[in-house]
Length: 474
Image (cartoon, rainbow, N blue to C red; front, side, top):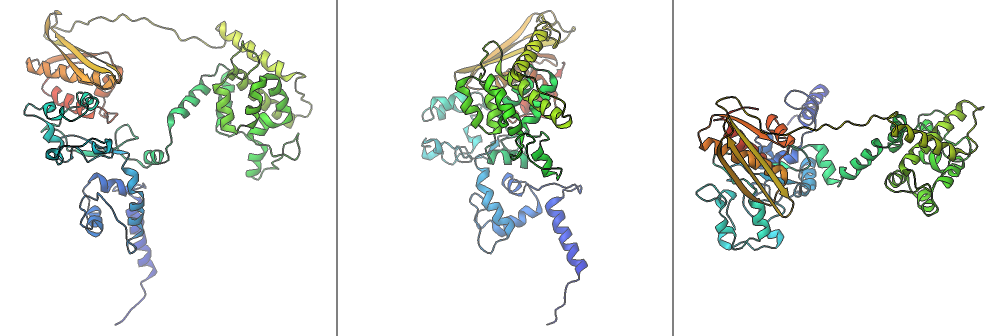
C-alpha cells in the first residue's frame, strides 16, 4: 500500500471550504451560523440531515441530546449549549398539528403541577378545537384552572388554513433567532434598568454639553491620564496627587480638589456611601437619590454640573498653569445651576413642548363605503375585551359586536377588535370598508410588512386573510 503527502495547496483549499461552511451564507457574506437553533427549529437542509443521521441515536426530534467521547468538537459544543434554548423558545401556532398540547414547552402544564387526564395526554393543539373552530372549553373546564382558561379566551385557535407551526425565540421583536439576543438572555442582561438610567441622563435639566459629558462619564470614556497611559501617551498619575492613578472616579470624586467640593454639597448622611461606591453605582446613586444639602434644587442637576465643572477646571489647569479655580468652587457650581434653572423657567434656555388639542369625531366616508370603528381595553390580570360597530356613509348602524377576552394585553385586545370587525363585515357582504382604530401601534403594525412582535402574530395573519376579500381603505 502506497501513501503520499497531500499537497499544501489542496489542504488550504479544504480549509477554505470548511471556513466558508462555518462563516459564510449562500451569498458569500460573512456571518455566524446559528447551528443549534436551526436544528431545533426543524429547518430543512442537507447538513441538518447529516447531523441527524450521525447523532440522533434513535432520538429523531433531538428531544434529549447526548455527546460521546468520540463525537466531534462541534457536536459536543452544541450539546453543551442545548439546554439554554429550553427556557427561551416557544411555539407559534398555525395549524396546530405539529405541537403537542401539554409537553412541547418548558413551562408545560405538568411543570405547573397540573395533572393531565390520561385520555388527553397525547393530544395535539388542533385536537383542542371543536367543530366550529373554537376552543373546546367544555373539554377543558373540568380540570384546567380558571386563570389558564381566562388567558385562552384571547388566544386564536389553530386554523386549517393557517401557517405551519414553527419554533420562535424570545428576546427579539419578530421571533427570529439571533446571536445577540441569545447572548443577552443567557447572561440575564436586562435592558429595562439600563434604559431608565440613559433616560435620566438625557432628561437632565442642564445644558446639552453637560448632558453629553455625563453620557461620556457613564461610558467611562473621559481622556484621563490613566486612559492616555493605556495609549502609551504619558504617565497615569494625577498631576495634583502625584502618586495616585488618575482614572474617571479619581478626577471627579476622590481627588482632594474634588472631594472638598462634594463635602460642601452632599448631606452628611450620604457622604459615606457616596465616597465608597464604584463608578457605575456612584452614577446610579446620584441619578436616583436626593443627596444634596440644598433641598430647593434637584440634586442630579447639581451633581452633573459639579462633575462637568471639575473636569473643566482640571483641563484648564493642565494646559494653562495660570488658571485658578474659584475660591469657593461649590458656590460657583450652585450659582451656575441656579442661573440655568432661572433661564429655563423664563423659556430662555429651553423651549417648552407645545401641546395641541385634537377633536376626535366620527369621519364620514365617501358614498358607498362602510366604516368599521373598533376598540379594545384591558385591565391586566383582571379582564379584557373588545368591541366595534359598522356604519354606512350616512352614519346609519349596520351591525356591532363585542367579545370577552379573559386576560390579555391592550394591544392584543385591539387586534381582536379589528379581526372580529373584519369577520362581521365579511359576513354582511361588505366589500368597501374603512377601518378606524385608536391605537397607533396597531395601525403601524397592520400597515407594515413586518409583524413587529410574536405577540398577536396569529391574529395579524387572520386579519390579513380576512382583508383579502374586502377592499380596505385607510
